[in-house]
Length: 242
Ligand code: ADP
Ligand code: MG
Image 1: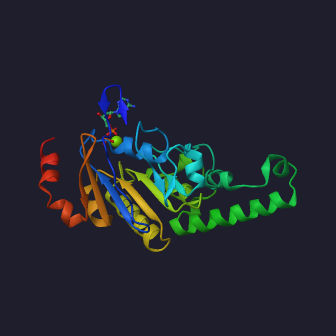
Image 2: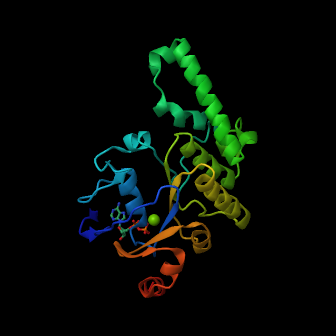
Image 3: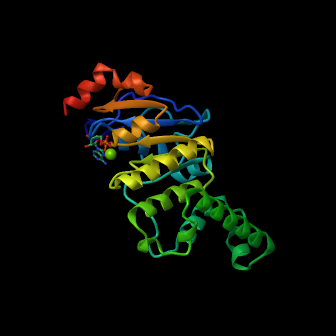
């Protein structure tokens, strides 16, 4: 991926083991967000491939990647602030719907069944996250940490196989960070999802990651377990050099 003359990503390759937490780290400007956006389809790379369970999704638009089982959150919260939590979560189910707008508008049985199923799934996800008590609240009335949880809930409502989190604990206090760490590990351990985590908070990365890929100046400089990466001279240099 290049912007003007800048190689934001150059020959970067890595794979995420199903059911694991994979962290993508690197100094500022290393290419983490660009990589995240290439994987989710916000950007189309000049070369290379994105594979999901072996399926080539390189040319798919973001909503199609979502339908194939890829869900994401944003570094800055992107929620409908004047809607309730429940409605924000229901919107996330929309892309799975089969009933269509006319059937929904007419309240036909198929659409009503779908609505019941969606409401049940939304409740289930809210229970899992621990935000059931906030379902009827407007998003803008909720504390920052809870809004971040709603974003994860919305991603889970699309029934993904892989969840991509862009700096999920940025701006959080210690308590909120601990809660998010617990949530991410439960997403892996209890739901069996794969998680790609872009994160600056090294404590969180070391606590959660099964594997780490390190970028620096658009290149992959290391890839391995926490212990391997921590001991890697190239990684130490990349971090100390900035
Ligand atoms: P990180 O998320 O690791 O901090 P980014 O992926 O945001 O890094 O940026 C990688 C490089 O690409 C940087 O040099 C940045 O200035 C450049 N870059 C990122 N996005 C754009 C863009 N939309 N237009 C131009 N340059 C960009
Ligand atoms: Mg970034």
